[in-house]
Image (tube, rainbow over all chains, first blue to last red; front, side, top):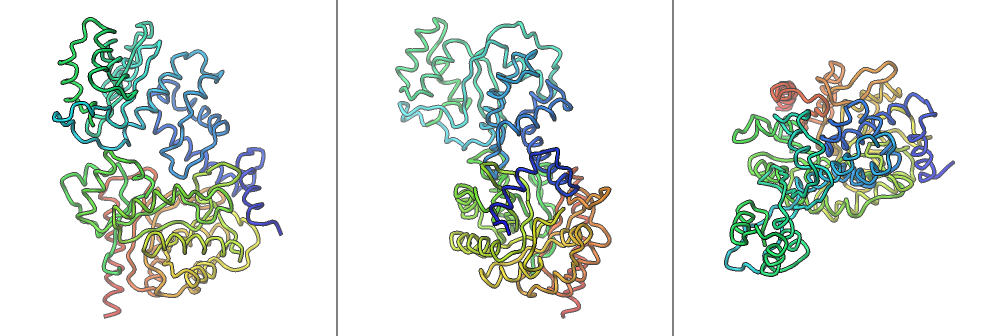
Amino acid sequence: MPSLLEQQRAFALALLDPALADEGLRVYRANVFGNWSAALGGAYPVVRAIVGAEFFELLARDYAQAAPSTSGDLHEYGAQLAAFLDGYVQTRDLPYLPDVARLEWCAHLAYYAADAPPFDLARPTQARLAPGCALLESAWPLQRIWEAHQDGGDPGSVDLGAGPDRVLVHRNRWRVEVCSLGAGDYRFLERLRAGAELGPALEAATAADAAFVARVAFAAWVQAGVITQ
Amino acid sequence: MAQLGAGIGLRARHYPEFSGARPAAGWLEVHSENYFGAGGRERAVLESLRRDYPLSLHGVGLGLGSAEGYSARHEEKLCALVKWVEPAFVSEHLCWSTAAGRHYNDLLPLPYTEEALALVAGRVARLQERLGQRLLVENVSCYLEPGPHDMGEGEFLAALVRRTGCGLLLDVNNLYVNQVNLGRDAEVQMRALDAESVCEIHLAGFFRGEHRLIDTHGARVAEAVWQLYESALGRFGPVATLIEWDTDVPALDVLLEEAAKAQARLDATHALAA
């Protein structure tokens, strides 16, 4: 009799092979792919809306075959979607899609990120970005694409030719927000993320953008909970 | 824990009803993995509810019976969550979920063999030691026989209890689904169990497929399952009972109605015992 390991490996291979049509196996296959697809759609609602629910099912199936799930926590599923889409022929006519996926994965991580203590003004040199904050640069107007697909947004309103974007993803209490940044703010937050101290980070930002006002920017990002310690 | 009565599975859809109000549920069960995140809304909701309701952490991703790929990291996260929540119950499924480098994120069926029993018993014993509390192990619904068995499902569960001292989370709907799908007599499985080993009961609704019942947790509890539940209460006493609903989750009132039906049967069992 085959060992338990041999049995489970055989069962696992059969699950992935749609040519095997045993009735019970088909139920498991539908459950397994359904769970993966639902998890992927949960993490990538904007990608799903852009390609449409029907096509998303096909995409999810191809992704599942290409990028195995490796965690029993489905919230960790889908981390490689952007890289997968970089090489996915079927969505080549949507060149901005991989960047949207990159953005959504950051948003997904931000949603579950650790809560951050408020910034302590008595110890300003320990400033750092709150957990879950992410910075992205894209050739596409990412923030507008994101905004248009939130409640009350109009997906038809996005001008894809609006040019490049630098965005910050962060969580405001329980809600994930995406905002476009000017060159100064981007450099400032990017330096903090890299571990720079507050003074040098502000100097780098001022050098990058003459319009950057250190005092105003610092206060605003503390207020937004983006800078913590 | 018989005094817990009837509870419901809490899903994100019903967070608003629990924000500021405390609907009359005896206790709440959540999926452990939904709270593995470091922070954010899910943790805040749980932090608030754990003060007002007995909680049960129900894991869906550990895969106690996986011959390879069992995750120490997953176990670690579960232990940390249990330490924080201090739940009334911690439960996992009698299933496997990983093979050949891939997690299947489903409750895959185990053959009831000595080999599987030794593997699962070792994992359960170790996990209980780490948790510092009794683990409840749940029988799953099956859509095929995974291989030759050495014993019946009930016998396997009873043997697991004897070897590890774990408790059982008896899913009566799953027993019924397996009876219909695979011809495993539900009453026979229940007769194999010691009364005091059953610490929790699950009830849910299934979907009637063309050739099989599919355990979708997406409907009201079927009449035949209520009957089996009454039989279970007669055998095991007024065990804490949970209404599970995972797909097409309806309004909270529907869950509470189902829980009230379970509670009425629990009360009747209490009255009979008094």
